[in-house]
Image (cartoon, rainbow, N blue to C red; front, top):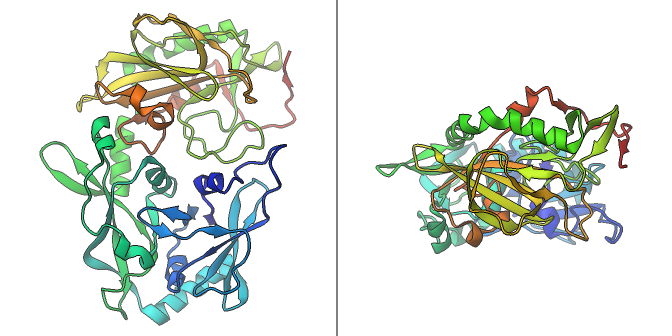
Amino acid sequence: MLRISAADMATLKVRIRGRRRPEPPEFFYQSLPSEGIALLATIPRFTVSIPGVSAWRGSLPFAAAAPESAAGPVVVYRLQPDCRYAAVAVIKNGSDCAFEKYTEIAECRTRDRFGNLEKIPGRYVYAAPDKEEWGSVLRDNGYAALNADKISAINMTPVLPSDKTERYGHAIQIRAPLYSGDKLSARNPLPVFSRVEILQSDGRESRWLDFEKYQEARDGLAVVPCGIADGFSEWLARLTDESGFDKWRFRPGMVFSERTEWWGLRSRRRTVHEGLDFVEGFSGGNVRLIPEGVPARALASGEVAATLDDFMGKTVIVRHPSLRLPGGEVFHTLLCHIQALEPLPRFVKKGEMLGSVGRRAGVSIRPHLHLTGAWFPAGFPFTEAGIDTIIHPGFTPAILTSFNSLIETSPLCVISPDDMEFLIDDQ
């Protein structure tokens, strides 16, 4: 499946519908280069996107009207019931064809016109992507849509990290192999979907890892340390009691790595969810919302590293200096969307109150407590980076961790499907 990415939908201002927003267009059109047939022939067998604008992949923007003429294929995206845009057809030479059928045709025509696609030995596109670009690659399982028409404007040699990434302690470098057909010269790369490789450095040597191995290495580190996991049940029990619940209810969108929003029209998130949202629970046979004013308490002893504004309230970041990875990263817990105490103590004990559940005026999303756990480099400048950067899944200095297994095995939590008939008692 080919979709317009959530980031592009936000840019197009059609990510969600609301009372004050105009009805989004039913269709969007994306014109590909003349050799774009090779791009459609190499779409992976899962959902991916062709970004409209990218600093290292060129520009293939979307339009709300079909072009009068186009050198290459034009992908037609249609608004779906889930408020996303999916490719439904391709226009070529004035006629249109169903998208699934055209990808089959594209494979045959690519072989006939260009020959079998092969990597060009020793030729790569290099990039130091920002978090949005890297987040797009992560969402697309490591694949990037390369526009060969723009290859001349793209770095063909490794690039240096920016001052900003150096200040943050880590910079990611990626490369993507270029492809050509065996009927063409290697000087003529074709637009294709290509899986990236990541430069991995351990201080002694640097080597390129394929995307899957990189993900495996990250996943091996993205675990909640025993020092936090052992006390989670006690912390959860106290939160449950102070909320007046018997147990918590987690619907789709409320747990780590979910891709949909649990509120409103259940739109697709711009990035995957970075933690747990404690929103609602069972009380006396009813499902109720977490009351405003419920204490937000520290999971474990530590020191307050920063207090940052988020879109609903404040985020309090607690550093736990005794919990470290071999690379020096320190574990932190983040309690988000709360009304933080002022002033906060520098050092906090396990269970100490840091604030309370609440939201700032004018925010329509229900009050809730968001919990994130992450490994950050020692001495990381949280205030300089900002909350939107540090919890972004595409931001490489942070290794986000999942609490999902802890709630899945807890008798105080229920993971349930999204049942719209299950009414919530707001009183």
